[in-house]
Length: 327
Length: 246
Image (cartoon, rainbow over all chains, first blue to last red; front, side, top):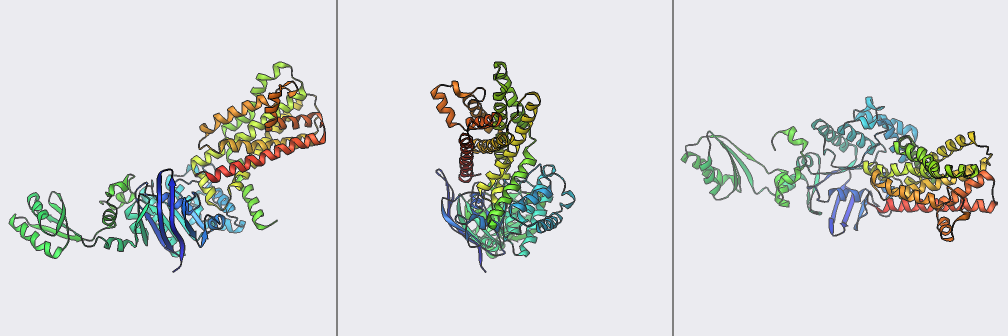
């Protein structure tokens, strides 16, 4: 599998601040690759350097084999960009916005008319094609922005925080569209601070913190990095504070969360810990109502790798939180 | 012409058409382009019994000076603030293409204002300008001042930030460039400063368009200086756009 994006020691300084520190990674052709990290981790700066919007202090970035520093125009012909701050013209209609972007890409009239219609239908905007973009909701604007980024049929799509600030329905629709694009040989590099979104959409993820890449791998392999600890969720028929404290004190168990009748405990070896927990329940005359073992999530892996609390990722509320219930 | 040049030309025209559609009818354009020149001239020239052949070129020069630049004082900071500049720069266009497209829109606005003022003034004053020379002078002046407006607006991200310094610079230039009165009576220092300012050459070229050329080389010099200034302003703006993080 060939690499569509190759990044080598990419670094960006803003005065004394090191926004991106020697980032190196490669994105395979047709892959959805995610940059995951909290606000200020360097995701947006990385994507801006990869799209020619910011010059790197040092390092190289090749897009489809083209050096962005040496051949930016040819590189930009191959990419579509949906930046977190980019926007289209509120005064122009959805149709005219797409035509304008298509003209900038030098598309022939017949091709750009057909492509605009195709994309507006795909993104559910065709009926509103004559409406000014300024009348669109945030979600509709984001859809139009992605359509504009795809108008010239780019090989690579950069999506910077594609669902940030969107309502649940729009976020879900955009994630669905990203999923559809993966079948069309479009390589996608997206940034997100929503852990679940990265897990759901990306084939590989680079975890960034303070400008540095801490780990790059598939979501499953990242989760396996913290596989040695499993999570046991035990529900008793009555509040179990005393028993829970004793469970926490057992060998091979880590931290425990107590919430009324439910105890969540991290264990290194469930086979050893479970009989002791059952014994403790008997001693305290507690009946076990349910007992679940859960595998570590990407959030667990993120916490283990970065040492950050997951709350730093949710300074803005994740649409997935509402959608999926508890996190 | 190579394909690359033709494509760049299409991009320039697309940006210019887009700018005319979006920014021509914004409020500040009407204020700065239509009303400010009239108010300035009313305040400083009309009560001094200035001759019509001085009034017309001066008034048209000010209209072009403020009008051609006004559209850029809006469009460039607004594009940066709203994020549309990202969309432009993410496309395969050079900063110079963006700047040229915007300058072309400003040029068109300057020419429209020049036509409106000239037509209105000629209705009431007995002047017979050389329309070819006058149009050439208006064209080059519009190009130069549109580029100048871009250059003044380039460092800013918002209209309220961009407007005040640009307006101050423009008003100072209006007074120093012999717009309200011929520079013959000016002191040597004033004359020296005036010769550095593009507005001086625009006023001179427009006067020659109204009164007939003093000499062909002098008229050509005015146009040449305006063109050179325009190129310098465009290159500086493109450099600022390329250099600065958007």
